[in-house]
Length: 89
Length: 249
Length: 114
Image (cartoon, rainbow over all chains, first blue to last red; front, side):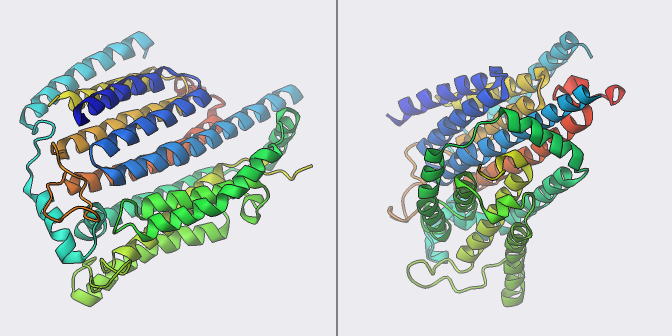
């Protein structure tokens, strides 16, 4: 039973990692990597590592997406400012 | 380097890594057949030795405490690095242009989102405190709890105006929390040096009931929890751009 | 089954590296790096796993139970924290790089373009 579950989860991880890499648009990728973190966390739970599962859960579903989205927003803000400067010149 | 050349280099590198990997896998114990003694000894000694039930946290903060101290310093230094990087060359003129550009495009946060966020603050903060304080007994600990606590405060940002958020980057209070957490863990180490003559050795009696077991481990969890909360919030406030904070119309 | 987790870890390492090499956006590149790093968690926890072993938390199991290895779990815990801090630092660098080079494409960030 555990073995079957593990095989499913590990396969899911393999597919998930690939999906994260091929999603090239950063905002969409943030969502995908967050789901990938969830699968990672479930896998850790199944291999009897609840502490690691919990920390991957909080990193993957809170810390990482928040930091990513804010960084993307900041980069876009800068890009908008650059555009505005060019228009003024 | 052209993209094609880059892919060739990648292919060669990955092929070499695959070779090393196969070589390494030959001597790795098969999945599910681990028989290392060190981990078994630590797992067996955790309860009689420290009266704490979470062997992972006991290993992290007590048996391998120095590793964790160094890790906390990595965390501390990189967050200082983040604040330095994002605070240098702040260009006020450019910031005003950006705010103007953003003003035109951005929708307001909806009231529904604000109220849901506000309602979640209390329960999430309570959960965080549970995770931090019960780290040595059940899964959890300072790191996980610290991020959850930071989450509850990020929810406050989402819910609306907040002194720290409004002041924008790097509130001194957050810096103080972050630094205090890191320093407290080092102080616990010195406590071991004074109490037992060995840096970071558990110097508080492990006996006791309920939460008060594990000697210094709950204290270490608290200090790491503080540090991580401060760290994540510092990074978030440094990255937050002003348009997310502008007052409601 | 006995090598499958390691193969998955190798695959994650490989696709993550591929993503880094072909990335046109530094934020995308940083996320690919987290995929590479996640392969190390899979290896570490895979090494310490014991078939039928329980989590090394004795709150509700007898202290004599067979458990999985707590040391690799402590290591992985450290690994996850380091991943989060590395990501924070790299994102700050990406924001600064965009400010300096006016582009998020790593290929546009040479000294020549500054």
